[in-house]
Image 1 (cartoon, one colour):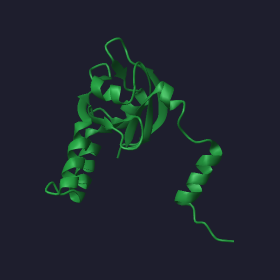
Image 2: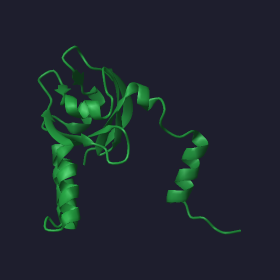
Image 3: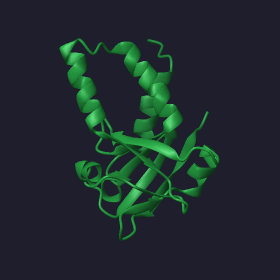
Image 4: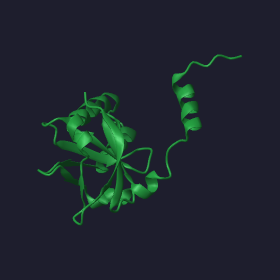
Length: 151
């Protein structure tokens, strides 16, 4: 199982290509060069999935959706229309469709963030405005992971 850790400031070259950080390439291994990228459902960023993990996600998705249900069909159409496949080139760079970059206001300066089995791609300007301070993070950890005892 691949786990991505860390955040990396990157800059797209004049053709719009971004170099995959070496720590992420190391986590992937030599064989995983194919990815799926899509607009995040909740945040103003793109999410990059190694293709092997994307296939697992599709199995979960198909198990919950019925293509003959109108609501499910609409969700599937919109979910997949915000997606694209890409591969790393021989220099470890990738190029994303402009339509996806425009959805999240990404220009040249980006931040790639490892979030377990996926990578988030943020506009560097937007990334500065997200996140929790240490007190907020502690509160989230307590709410989500901790057992609260009434006093």
